[in-house]
Structures are given as C-alpha cells and as structure tokens.
Amino acid sequence: MSNYYYLIAGLPDLTLEDSKLSYTVADFKEEIYPNLSKADKGLIDLFYLKFDNANVLKLLKNKDAVIDTRGNFSAEELMEYITSIKEGGVVSSKDFPSYLITFITNYYNDSAIDDDFRLLENDLAALYYAYGMNNKNKFISSWFEFNLTLNNVFAALAARKYKVDIAQSVVGDTEVTEALRTSGARDFGLTGEVDYFDQLVKISEIDELLEREKKTDVLKWNWIEDETFFNYFSIERIFAFLLKIEMIERWLSLDKERGRELFREFIDSLKDDVSIPAEFK
Image (cartoon, rainbow, N blue to C red):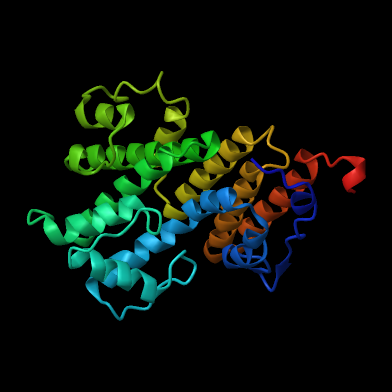
C-alpha cells in the first residue's frame, strides 16, 4: 500500500467562503484522486459508488434522467451497462461493480421484485454494503459495516416505535441484522455486541430531525478519528479526509453556524493529529 507523505502533508487548507466550502467532494475527485495508485483509486471508488447507486435507480426509471456527476460512471456508460444486462449480455465485474450487475439483473429478471422505489433502494443498499464490507482494507470494510449497523439499528428502533415490521425495515445479512430481525429483547440483545448501541438509542429518541442528524454525524466523526488514529500518511487518512469533507459539505447546507464550527474542529484535528516529519515540512 502506498504512503502519501507529500500529498497528505500538502492537503489544501480548507476554508469557508461566503458560508460555503471552497473544497468539495467533487474537487477531491479532480485534484487528489489522480495522484493515487491504481489500487488506492479502487478504494476511493467505493466512496463515489454511492452516487452511481442513485444514478442507476434514476436511469432504470428514466433513461434520460439527469444524474449526479460525482459518480464513477457517466450517464452514457451506465446506460450502456444497463442495456447490455437487460438484453442478456455479459458484463465483466472488472469493468462494472459486481453488486450493480446483480442488482440490475434482478431488476429485469426477477418477476417477484417489487417496483416500489424504497424497496429497490433497500435492495441496492444491502448489496452495496456487502460489497464494501468484503473489501480487504480493514478500515474501509469496517466503515461499511459501521454504517450498515448504525442505519439498521435506527431503522429497527423506528419500526418498533411505530409498530412496523422490523424484518422489512433492516437490510443486509450480518449477525446484528439477524438479531434486529428476530430478537424480542428491549435492546435486541446488542448492548454487549455493539459498543455504541446506547448512543444510538439516545440519538433515536431525539425528536428534532436536524439535532438527530448532528448527533449522528458527530458519532461518525468520532468513529473515523478513532479508527484512523495511527494512519498518518496512508490511503485510510485520505479516505477519512474525504468522508469528513462530505459530512461538512452537507452540514453547511443544513446549519451554517454549526457547520462552520465542525469545519474548524476538523482542520484543527488535521493539524494536531498528523505529525509531519521535519524532512517533509
């Protein structure tokens, strides 16, 4: 795995201008991505696939839909793969992610598949999380598992509160997911299994949506900090940088003042956590 001494030491000072980020997820793809090794580009692609997921769902409904250009594939490329799969063609997983091939194949070939957008979204999410968790990079696979667990616990707690079928509300195939689907215990038997379960319960009890989003992002931020504490110049540090850029980019659209505060904390943490050797200063 490559080390990016100069790249990380020289990460741009992220500043706010007119209450907006001057550095975005899209900028990252243009400015930092080209400097990565082929293997590490593949890891960063996992992040940007979330945009491809949304784009695939749009194009399955409307081949002329306007897509999010932050994805790895253009609209033309996606439609080419979608059309080929629809017509029974062979698409290599070397060219197109295997989970998307599976999802699109199921969409056209499984007569039992529900056309409800939410259910389709859940099916795709389950495949995406499994794909990410199967990655050999420990930090990235753990990040996907963490997010799957977090989202499923929130979904299960909400389903229980509003008396909705929990089994239909959670996605994926993990021990935690199975516990959420089958356990009748108040904590689903997860208190000792999921370290942050109590935090998730407290967050789920917050009525105000924006405040709940804030607490969730802080939990994610702290998880990223803990998991990358010893990753100074590796791809994990760059992946974490991208994750935080995305969070703060979204925060600014939700709450400008709190977004500024988190952004300053992020910059300070970069300066404090990364000790740059003298020869690289």
